[in-house]
Length: 384
Image (cartoon, rainbow, N blue to C red; front, top):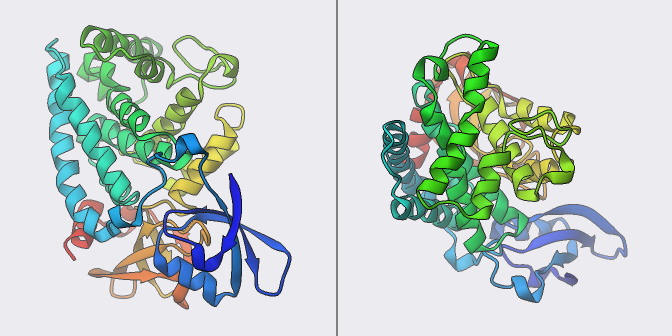
């Protein structure tokens, strides 16, 4: 429900649809969620008098996407907590894959607890765990992919307005969406070169193996089965395993496909290096025949034009990690400066809000170009 309110009534967590400048009847299209009190102060300084806010319908009042300011933590505060959670999750998922490969049962209680912890972290701060998805280790690709997809789909589904109970189930589904890969022989799964047709056929069977495992180990809710079965399907029917098109795909399966492709393309694997997050977002936006564009556009809004956690070059010859998306001013996120191009070395992290700085982002950067270890950099930021 849309409602126009005074700028003085605007609170952190509200979603702004339009802004109205003082002494003007004209609305300015400038959408986005208010992430901090600083954003409100900046709007006031810019002469904003009123804002149109999208309030939830009555049956969505308890929706966990409507964050309470008192429950929020700063990105750096949550990042310190999230580092340990991400490490624990990696160890847990590794054991899950190894156990599955040996036909051992999955512990549903422990895995749901992990999904709940991820959801709780994302609800405290939607950016912190997303930053950690940029820690890449090609030897741990399949474990990291499961966790990263869980983190991304958790935050994205909250952004879209899903209720907390559903988000927890979706997050669990994302942790499991590629569990069938544990049954793929390692020489094929970790082949450094391109797969031949027979090998590709074996890999594609991971979908059916995943569904069988979920059913056997009591994870077989309709929602989770939908995610497992359809995350490789495409709107034009070019996906697998069934080659079904948009008329038979749910919104959730389309969301899962977007998240799965984004993390897979940005991740380091045995046969390729990861692509720049910005390049992958462009890929998703370009392929309107394969991915639901309304959802892709929302995904870009959620992550930011320069996705949270990615490395960017600034006009002052520094490199920085994007800490928080700015949905009201997408090209001016909150960042942490971590590297001097002139000195050719890492520097002590310095947090900056680009809405108040004279320098700006000039490009996305591949960490490999400067031999930057994102694991080390991100943990340095968390330690501040």
